[in-house]
Length: 582
Image (cartoon, rainbow, N blue to C red):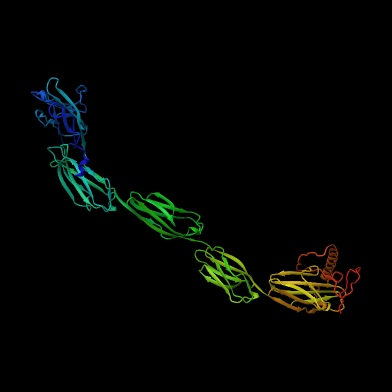
């Protein structure tokens, strides 16, 4: 039986051979239960030539040298022993037959120790053998468990007790073995050194639930009240089983969340938190928490907990959903189109949950979707009215974001009806209002004088663009006999449009509408500007002037500065010339 090695009993022999050498054999160690007895087997030898008439012997306790006066356990010559061994020791062997076996009864803990034998053949023929037997006084049985007990694999556990008392033999029984298996009693067995043991075996297949189970062995002796018990806790090895794990988790962006993973295993598992194959945290522990602070949408996803030890592994996953407001929408599509073309605009964003997406222009909703991340705006045939600023708005319960974009519709110029000319006294002012994309080239024609003035001549024409509307103003100053005919033409890469500007009466002149006092002030400002421009043009050929603002009057065109072919030039001494008509 492989468990007998748990009580190592063997003989010690000095280097000798029968006939000519001193030698002794006894177990190096022997054990017995407290209050019982023990028989220490012993035999010795001596040279053949000594032939003693009588052989005597002495057993000493804890020292082999008589000069140290060790306690005498047994002495065959006088039977005088130490008080500790009085009535408790006797010789079982026949010294004449070189058998020195001794028995000790009523064992108590203080009798545990080393026992030496000395052969006394008379005279100087005495020899104390250095080899000895160590007696161990016990009060619990020994439960022998294999070095490794693995769940699912059959195991054999033994209970072994010494049986070295000829007068008292132990009886074994198992405690707490219910549900594990039926014990098998092997009975009394002799060990190699001549000592004896009683053994009982228990066979069963352990489960993970058996880990830590307390298994006991009880020893009794018939016709006595002696009873001894020993216990062993089973250390059952088994693979991990994840027993604690979050369910799906929802958390708001910027908050903190804790993911917890706990595993039952023996030995303790290496727990690892992972995401997309990357290790986030690991430790040898029964449970492992993963702290995620200041959550971002990028941390949304599936997290896995892996538990592993030498006997197997287990893994579980948990989904983390990070709730957050929509990102600023992105807009893709055709932003510039020619009138009549189809336009498609895709607005997309990202959020959790999916948002409500809306596209509107000038507070008018053009398209909307609910709980989707993309919205497509389709305009089958764009017109000039489709040109302008658009908004794409994304919103959910966590917030709102918006993006602005522009659709530019290119079309042939359109001269608006508010274009006209007006005169008061000796000043004519012509306003040409053009809607166009791209920006047109605007020119004023005076057919009667065969004169064309375009916007590049900024000393005479001033333009201002607001959105798609370009307003150009031509101002003429001089002695006008009759209102001139003025034609406004606008041209871009898609075509040209012309309109003869209608002439309005003096009382309908735009700058007269501000009232008598305002007219006087405005006229004074106009005269000052005329003087400034006249002096400036004498210094350089062309001058860039800033665009005019609402409420301001543009500079005027003088006949002295603008020569009309076929018309005699007036005297330069006059500050204001008159543009005559045919």
